[in-house]
Image (cartoon, rainbow over all chains, first blue to last red):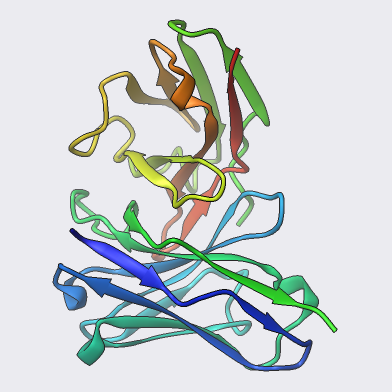
Length: 123
Length: 110
């Protein structure tokens, strides 16, 4: 079964750093764009950015450029989302999702989603 | 870019049809035929329902259908079932490898 398995919930203090992970299995990890999506408490989904693990080409939503870093280690089929200095406003559920290759563009629809990682930032 | 506009809520009785709209601009929904839709039951991972405006991935029932006119895309759920009660999100390609989601619509099956 194709799946993305994310790391567990995190509780951090403002100013701390954090790196959460998303491991792909049962598909060619390097050949699909992989994106990150934020869901603030009680709010909708927000596109953060995506990476192509094959060559680490990374694109960010203008809203998240400079706020987070997306990376991947293709040797272990794992993508990452990291913060250097967390804020309380980063408290949210974060999903990773694979871009579907059913589409002509190959990076506009998300077919496989991870289970989500809840990040709580509080003093 | 701004989020796409969806109605916050929609409802229908079992067996009925409901249509959820998703309004953007000429730089996203109106500019590309790359609109997708997702079903999200709280506490679960979102589920992929529709891509390229009106195509269904394997395994998605044909009760779910998509369309687009100008800057507005729509998702229609026919033959409503209790398990269709969920949040629904549209998403559009917005150029330069960016995507933009709608604010979400909570569908209630009465």
